Image (cartoon, protein in one colour):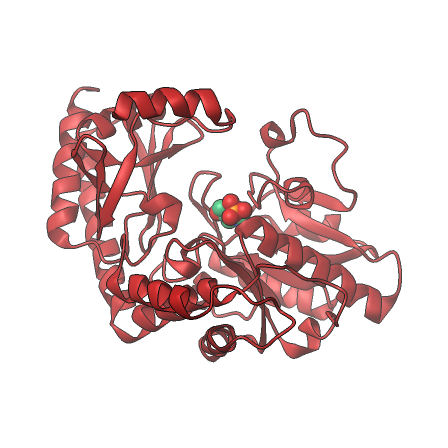
Length: 396
Ligand SMILES: *Cc1c(COP(=O)(O)O)cnc(C)c1O
């Protein structure tokens, strides 16, 4: 049955992903099952999406209840769960207002449009340029691709959208040099996750904040992957003691229900007025119910604290493995967004893990990205480490 499905998948689906030859049909907590009934420990969480674990009962209940009440109505009306979800996001962030959309790319797209519109309103035409980082990842739409500082993603798609300049990550002097009268915003991830789990330095972000504030250059932080508890706090910017101007969210926001958002202060979000930006599905009742349940559970049930402890434990165990295996060259990250850099073939390692019943991800061919659900227990981490030990031993 599984083999047949995979064959059909290859036949009927666009060939845009390197899919593993496995079809997952069921999930619960940190575990998923394939069509043959085989169980896997999930240290990828649908790429940092199912932060509360698979099929968390609060989210399942919120979605199913809402589906039976009202699935969609459009943003020409007020939507109860959407208003409540926005209220919750504002209550727990720097921001005043929320715009909902459906994905990370769309959230960054909205952030880019908002920054340009804000600048246009205040300073007129010509101040539209955005400084982004080398090795960044912001999405696959034309604008977010243009903002993504990795050549390989641009291949075959030029011309890119005008007005994006790239500077090295963690290099404030380079950013200052790249700033001119056209600059309206800086777009940055605090952890370049897809890029290989590179963490922004504290002083750099603090100084970047001061520099951008002095010039009324908006600081847009892409929290699509780092947000919603992934780094041990609800938003990663909280670790840096700064306030951004705009953040973008998606991945973990609906715990698997597709939804994105940006958050900003009134003074900035007010640049959007009716007719300037919109999304038919954005924040629809079903998506918003998922967001609301996700946030409530994450904030009220001590998940963040628990995930900090789990992150520290996992990090410590990985450091132990590093002592044993010299091909592990670095371990980095925050909370439960960790990267294990290896000097062997990481893609092959990922496949070995899968054979042993553990799902991980590899970026850049040599950085294992570990993003388990935030509810992962120390017993589950022990199972992971045991498998890692077993797999790594083959590479000695
Ligand atoms: C995943 C990701 C995106 C793109 O999100 P999509 O929902 O795939 O469009 C953008 N930025 C970052 C940091 C991401 O990790």
